[in-house]
Every structure is written in structure tokens, then in C-alpha cells.
Image (cartoon, rainbow, N blue to C red; front, side):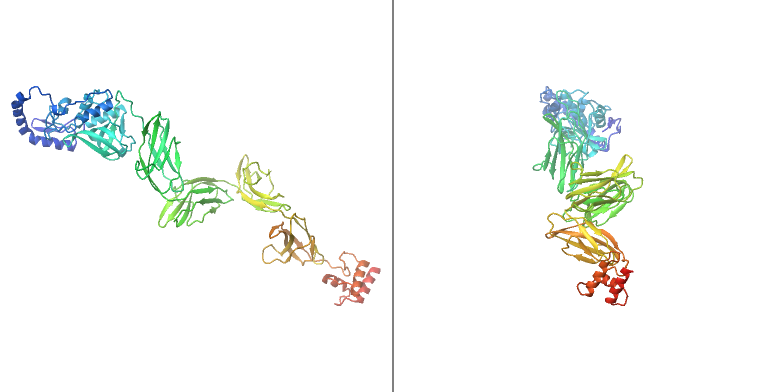
Length: 640
């Protein structure tokens, strides 16, 4: 109600800004006023003798003795008036004319006492409790009363208007819409969810009400600066950022002056129904925790020593979902997205924005992504999340922000304890250098095993047995960008060396012996290893192993066997060229000597055999037969 009223004046009602409800009340009075005025006059005349000496409103006297605790006293005074009905000073007449002792005490408005009296009742109770008008104003207007507390800075918004204040006994409760009050009462109690009140002009009498704190009819509370009581402690406002069944739900609140600690209290369901699901005593702000699926209510208690003040209650629902992790690569190495699997999920969609999520179209969406999902992204800052699908429904994961920088991708060609391990990478524009960093075990656990500052590409080194992790830092002046991390294992093994022959002479394969080896297998491909079947495999080869190979390009390695296990050597690439044949040079020493004649003679005497290439060399007269004529020609060459 406003500060002006509807009054009967010169046979008319004058509207000074009252609301419709109050106008209806006054119009009702108009029809009854003349008849009741006459009856009241007769009653006064007849009853003056009988009523002589009776106090006014004897039926609803304030019998309470004030204690000095003004917050308690105003409630106690109000309780003595419960049941008082408008219509007479005594409050025992069942009427609806707005005539009450509270209005008579408050004073005439535009020459009369018949006006809406809810705030006059509040002011009367305050006066009876010894509370000055500097604490609770003397007024019949609800707008005036509310404005008094607003101007003092002691007005608190209701939950429906976005507030978090939990009222206490003695507070003044305002009802209405938005910031426009139409009714008022005195708070007698509050249990955190329901507020209990005593109100004048409640169905034409002093009555009580129980109403939920979140009811939109409540617009706010005047919190008087009572004397004789400790003022109420300020309450924090709780905000909840809901996660899912895999990522944290975060609880945050404003810092309250004087608070010594905060306790987060969470119920699965409704607060105070059964035990709390979780209480975090002395919680840090913000406080985060992963909660299982379900609907929750939570609040924060601000502690002031042994006292405490409760925040607003927040209800939220946690759904099933996953947590996204991003292992950032660079402009050459893949960025990897991983997440935990969720029961009953029908699929996962990875959604990546360059910049902020939902600003413009996504940079990339991988529908039905496999876990993990990897992709090379260009330089830039990104945000990404995973939608977990449950049929037509979906649940979003956490959002991860990450930055992809220019860099290289490391590749490792693993050797063994005898053969070099080779590190190669792609060159990056504007790079000023590359540093190869190798750990035995996990990167960054202890000191690196080896760092090659300013490494050449490729970089090769023989490493002892063990498991390693390595990466390359690409340097851009004083800045640097790390490559992907590669894990590899070095095992005991040999290093293969190849002494290349030609189509007439043997190619020799040699290697170092390895402790505990049970055998060696030489494997030779014509072309690339593992492309098709090998050209030749010598199982259990002796060291050295020699063989004449036809013209061509080959790759070969040696497998060192350790029982049923084996370890591959380095791969050697080599070319076998066609031999230049010198007629008569049977021992292939590129010189004709008597040794060649002896070999041919022994062949003719059937004391030895010739290889195919030796036989071709021995056929000096090229008649397709090796015989005494060829030996004669050879001797002739030796003499001449």
C-alpha cells in the first residue's frame, strides 16, 4: 500500500493511490457505514454506565512484559493480539470496516480511521515493545514502510526476487509484486524453508501464516536494527556450476565479512530429509566434487565462531556424462582427445571450436568419435568438449581450452644395444634450432638421460637396454615448442655390417655377438624389408655369413634369438653390381696367376668343383666346354 489512503469525505471516497484490494475493502464499508454509525451511537449511550471503568480493548490487551530483547519482544507482543478482529476497539466484533485500535493509535488519515491496517498493526506492536520509530517506522503505508528499510540499507530481497536472505523472528515481511508491496506482517519463526508470520488485516483479523520462502508473494524483508540483540550475521549467496557423473560440480559463494569458515552441505533429494549426502567442513571456495547421477539440494553455512548463517538453497541435477582430457600436440603432431566411457552411452561426438565454444560454427565435429580421437590442428587457441549420446538425448562433458603452437613431429627408428636409434622430425618454419631430450623411464621424472642441444636432423645414438621417452623442443629464439612424446624400448641386440661383393664374389654379413643369444638369423629382401617375401633367410647363420647375390638393391638385418624371443638389428641397404669378368681369373683376385691354372687343372683332374661364375671364367675358348684346350690357353696367357 502507498502512503495515502481512501477516506470517506463529503459523501465520496477519495483515491489517494491505494491498490485495488484496499479500494474494495473501503467500498464495502461505504454501504454499511451509516447504519452501523447509528447503531454504534445507541450502543455507546446505552453502555456508558455498564462499561464505565473498563480499559479499551480489554479482550486483547498486551499482557506481555518487555525483556529488552526487541527482536523477541515485538513477536511476543504480536502473539497477544492473535484473533483480534476489525470492527471495534475491543477486537471482538466480526466486521469488515477496517476500524481497529491500531488505526486509532496510528491516527486519522484524511479525517478517519477506516483504512487498511496491516502496517499500523506492525507499528503498534513495535511501539508496545518499546521500539522507537528510528527502528520500525510509525506508518500505515506498506510502501512507506518498505522504503524506510530500503533507505536504511536493511532491506533484503526475497528468494523469488533473487535474494538469499533467510529471515529471523522479528523481521518485517513484505508481500506483493516485484518492488510494490500490498501487505505486511511480522516474522515469528523460520526453519530455513518455511517462514511463519503474525499479520494484521489477515482475513479482517490478526492471524498467522506459514509460507514457503520461495513463494513469489513474498517480495522482501525489513531487517530492523533492534537494540538489545546481536544483529543477524550476513549470509553468503551460493552458486552451483553443475558437472556430470564424471566431472566435478563446483560450489562457489561470496566472502562474508567476519566469517571464520564455510561448510558446504549437500543432500541427495531435499535438504533435511534424512542425513546429508556430503558435508565438507571448512570448505575452500570454490569447492568441487564429482557427484553421482541424481537431484540434489545444497547450501553453505558461514560460521562466525560458534554461530552460523545459512545461504540460499540451490537445487541441481547431475546427469551421466564423461570427462574430456586433451593431450596437446602441435601444428605437426596430433592432439589427442580421450574420455572415460559411460554406461549405456550410444556414441560420442567430439566438438572443437577455434576460439570460444558456440561462437560461430565449430572448427571440427567428429560424429561417433573413437576413443581416443587424434587430429593434427593448425596453430591457434581452441575449446572442445564431448557430447555423450544416449539415443536421442545427450550430455555434454567439461569444456577444455588449449593452444596449439607451431612445432615438429618426432619419429623414432628404434635400434638396440649395438645399433643406433635414429630420431627424425619435420623442419618447422622460423625455427632457430632443435633439442632432442631423452629420459630413461618417464619424461620429467628425474634428470634426462641425454639432451642433444642443437641436434642435427636426423640424430642417431646407441642407447643401452631400457624403456625411454623422448621429444624434440623446437626453438624460436628464446621461446620453444615441444613435439609429441615417443616411448620406445631398447633391447639387447647386434649391429649388422655388410661387406658388399658383386655378382661373382660373395657379400659378407658380420655382426657382434650378444650375451645370452641362442642364435642368429640373417634375413635379406630384394628391395624393401617386409615388402613381399624375403629373398633369402639363413636360419641359424654362422658369423660371418657370406653369399653371392645377383645384381640388385637389397635390405637386410639380423634377428638375434633369445629362446623364443628375438631382437632385430639395424637394417642395412646395399647394392650388388654386376662383376667384371676377367677370362681365366678363377679365384677372382683380378689377376691371372698360376693359382688360376692350378684350380683349373684340379677341376680337370676332378679334384674339385667350380662355381658357375668360375666355370664361365674357365671356358677360355668360349666353346661351352671346359677342357684341356682351355688349360692350354690359360698357360699360354701366363707365359705370354
